[in-house]
Amino acid sequence: MDSPLMASDGARTLGRTGTITTPHGEIRTPAFIAVGTKATVKAVLPESVRDLGAQAVLANAYHLYLQPGPEILDEAGGLGKFMNWQGPTFTDSGGFQVMSLGSGFKKVIDMTAVDASGPDDPTRGHSAREQSALGHPDRDLAVAPGKERLAHIDEDGVWFTSHLNGDRHRFSPEISMNVQHQIGADIMFAFDELTTLQNSRGYQEESLERTRRWAERCVAEHFRLTDERSHRPYQALFGVIQGAQYEDLRRKACRDLGAMPFDGFGIGGALEKENLGTIVAWCSEELPEDKPRHLLGISEPDDIFAAIEAGADTFDCVSPTRVARNSAFYTSEGRFNLSGARYRKDWGPLQEGCDCYTCQNYSRAYIRHLFKAKEMLSHTLISIHNERFVVRMVDDARNAIEDGTFWDFKEETLGRYYPAAARR
Ligand SMILES: [Zn+2]
Image: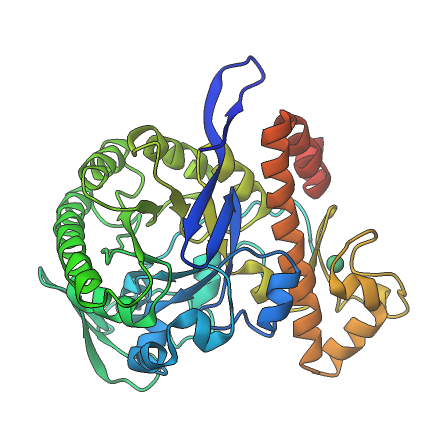
């Protein structure tokens, strides 16, 4: 940890700045991690991802396991080499996708946003992880009563059906570790069971115990693989904290996993948007202070501030590229949609004063034309801007913590971004 975030009364909060060191470079935290699910930040060249200031990329073990297969990434020399990304990389364990794309029943972090800005954006109100599942066969992650569950959880692991071709596959803690070692990201996550807010308290307890046992198995297999593959750069393993909305379960999970030799921790699972800061804070209070904490899958600017204040060091978010493909773009005044007729002859950049490549070179009118003409370049240009917008916001938050100006920065940023909320 470099410096703590101080409250306005001078008390220390859970927020902090810091540095995570990986074999592929340092990550200065708090940091926004760009999502590159299938070993690509959708529509954006790795060189552009670097130029817009993203410090690391997070890919997904489930997707890369199914396609192209982890042995391909292993032979390529790992995820970074395969995708020509020189910086740090993460892989999500695949547990979320195995269970959410498989079993259905509302296995989703429902962080339904208050619609306080960007009124013309139809994609608002979905959580980042919910959005990440859009486009798959069971896109709303809910299964009609009686429909066959596609993922079956047992003590040893999960049977699931590929969303690509219907093939049956097995994931277990050991298989996830093998897959993630082959993929070769700098930071990996332990295989966990995702529960939902709809699961009973009894089931949450049972599931949490299973996730604890799976965490122990992940650590054992990770150590074995680290020895066996000592010619490869060291890969760090983060445990994943579940426990849904229950304070005692979250704290217990943190104490249980905090005592295991993990390099850091992911905070995952079901949580409602309004409880995000509270749940992260419970975890930050319990987890070892000298290890990094990653919040898995967040959504919107207010979530970012809530996460930073509560002690999250890194977080990933698929929204910047996902909404870009619907022509939505971020500005300091909120999120807007380029398809609106008012941008037809708008010669200004997506955001006045933005230092991104897109805003330096292209007008709203041109990018709107590309989108309307279904040209792929619109996705690229808007994604670059949106990623830069979020990266810059988090960089500014980090600097503001170090300068002691975080609370003013937060008030000004969110007051501008959510003007309707500010007026209430
Ligand atoms: Zn821009």
